[in-house]
Length: 177
Image 1: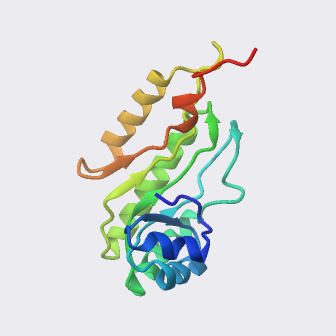
Image 2: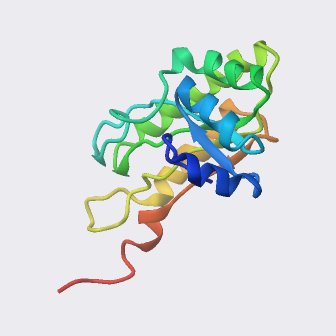
Image 3: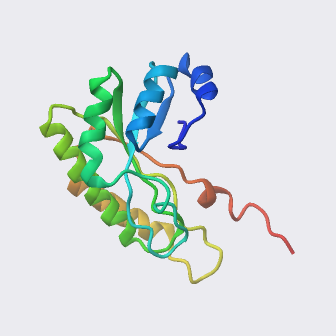
């Protein structure tokens, strides 16, 4: 997964033969991907709430949900394959409502896109899972309950759900004294 929404042309050319999944969030990237990595699969990154996250990413990444179906259609129109959606609620997200809102927004985009004749097959929920730095951080188990409940409520079982748990996986691997 090449997750940076703005990609270098040479890197796209090098990755094209591997048929990568690449994110995009604007029309210019659609044309760049078409030119330099036409075999790539695409995931549209949507802008979602980042309230309370240690690092808020939505100020610089993500398409507005209202533009999403048009950007997906534009990619299909030039012969690319959009495989799904992606979002990121911000690094070290302790506000679980960000995930709930992002999943609801994603469900609405998927529904509108399907209504236009394009059924997407995956949803990458990014990272942002809070690392247990201290006792004030809510447990991942509690977030998992929220996520699983929303997945069951909003999405068909065949939708592939991806996650990028970076910080959550490695934050407590070492301690600096």
